[in-house]
Image: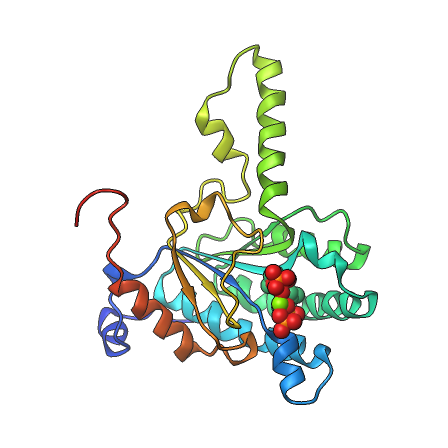
Length: 246
Ligand code: IPE
Ligand code: IPE
Ligand code: MG
């Protein structure tokens, strides 16, 4: 992967100064993508994983600092066993085939969510990916798995309460953010959701406080690099005031 120069970014209608530092994506619509083609849902999930490579690569090349991808929510355990097992096999396959290239490109992988409920093989693949890339300094690639924002917030509150007991005092407001999975990463700037649904579905509720929201009807397996660039261009056009004046 080569970092894009300012001119290369300009030729795509983008500018370094107006790129988000942290992007999150709700990768939705795999099932409907498949159904539209008369295929089983699993085909949609497979097609979806094929999009990951170009979106991650472009994020890294453009110099985006953090990319957080929603891959499996705490609510997705409600899916049929068969679908979950397809998703888990794809995860293992994905990590096995991509980890070396991601590592070579200095990408650091972090899992947002508790790994314990996953089958052992999945857990092992996730731990390996985190361990191997722990010291990388390029793109922070966060993969949200068994992730739910409410669970994340409650976990942070619980840990702060434990600290308070230990200290015998309130540990301070900063202690809370330092217990979130996103600790130490840039503020979330842009939240993208594909497939036409316009909701957060328990994703990054705290972090999204001032994020720009971008909804597209495109299903995730059709969300190409060009679609991503369009979202980044739209982000650049937004007037962010954070409660102040323009
Ligand atoms: C997103 O696609 C992938 C996961 C939630 C794992 P969906 O499977 O939700 O696809 P739709 O929304 O049913 O089309
Ligand atoms: C959100 O999509 C979770 C992921 C993309 C992993 P869902 O398809 O599960 O969300 P709902 O059920 O439509 O809100
Ligand atoms: Mg969905």
